[in-house]
Image 1 (tube, rainbow, N blue to C red):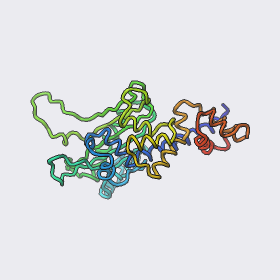
Image 2: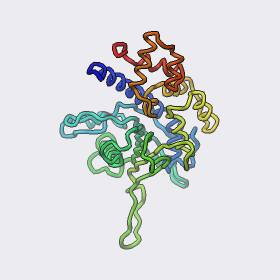
Image 3: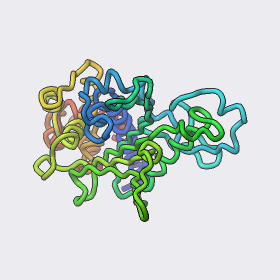
Image 4: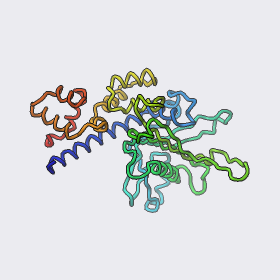
Length: 326
C-alpha cells in the first residue's frame, strides 16, 4: 500500500475507533445501563430492582472519560487536596501522562436489614469497555491498579491523616467485548477474602472488603451461560444486530425504557463501522467500496450489500472516511 494510502487508512481507522469508543462509553454511562450492570454483578444490589438502583442509589451524573487514573501527589500544591470532595477529582500526573477512567461515579449501598438508617455506605465505581483482552499485559492487574488508585485518591477528598475508617469501597468493572475463547460468556469477581490460618477470630467484612474487580466477558448468543447481564451487554454492544432488534430485546426482556437519547446512542452504535471491523471485515476493502461509490461506479445499495451492512450503516462509513483517502 502506498504511503499516502496507508496514512489515510490509519486516519480513517483511528476515527472509527474513536467514535466507537466514545459511543460505547456514553451507553455504559447511562443510568439504566449502569443499573443493569450493578444488579448483575455487584452483591450489594442483587436484591434491588433496576429502577431502584438507577433512581435511588446512583449519585449524580457519571463522569465519562474526564477523571484521570494516575496521580503524582508530590507534585501537587499542598492546598489542592483541600478543595473538592467526591469522585469528580482529576487524578492526573505530571510524570506519567494522563490515563482516564471510561466511566466513574458514586453510589450508595442499600442499608442492610437491621442497620441504622443513618449508616449510609458510599461506594466508588468504575466501568471500562475493553476490546483488547490480551493487550500485552494481564488485564486483571490493570484492573486491580485502577481499584488501588481509586482508594488512594480518596486521601484528602474523603479522609485525612489517619481517618482510614472513612475509606469507601471501590469497584472496577470491565466489559470485555472480545475475550479469548475460554473466557467467553463468563462473569468473574475478584475480592479480598480472609484466610484464617490459626484461630477463628473474625474481622467485620466492611473493614477489609474494600475493592472488587469484576470481568464481564461477552460471548456468542448460542453458547452456554448466555443469559442475564452477559446477554444484556452483548445485545447492547453488538455490531451485528440491527437497532430495531436491539431495542425490542432491551425493552421486552430487560425492561429498558428507551428514551430518545438512549435510542439515538444505540442507533449510533449500530452505525459505527468499528463494529464491522471487529467482526473481521477488511477496512481496506471497505474503503475501496467507498471509493467506488464516490466515483459513481456502484450504488450505495450495492456497496452496502457487498459489505453485508445496512445502507444506513454504509452511509455512516462514507461520512467518517476522509475524502482525500477516496
